[in-house]
Amino acid sequence: MPKAAVESSSFDKNSSPASVALVGTIASPSDAVVAFYTSALTAQGFKEVPGSTVGSIKSKDFLRGDNETVNISVVETAGKSTFTIGANVAAGSIK
Image (tube, rainbow, N blue to C red; front, top):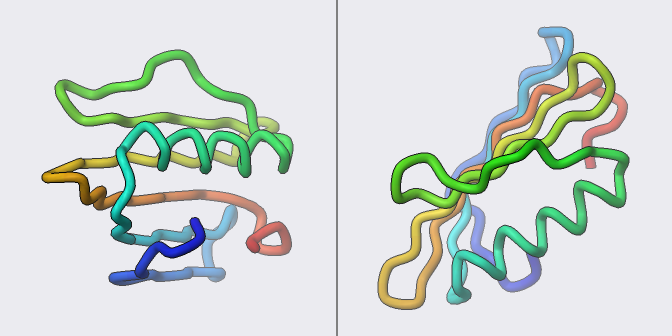
């Protein structure tokens, strides 16, 4: 997401599908973070899975094909959102 700061990231291409994780922060509301990544992921062929929270945490799951998954979860505090993206995808599709 433009203007987001990456706090940490990881990439394990030795598993199939590959595992990717990213933690970022941004001075935007959690709804804006979810909307940005929903647009980016659906443009890459992911389908939204019903549901948008886990307890009080914004959380959205996506599926592409039979085994590629992405989850984004966002915690917002005082106008700052911390988000985590976890994905299991084909190594060649990681952007």
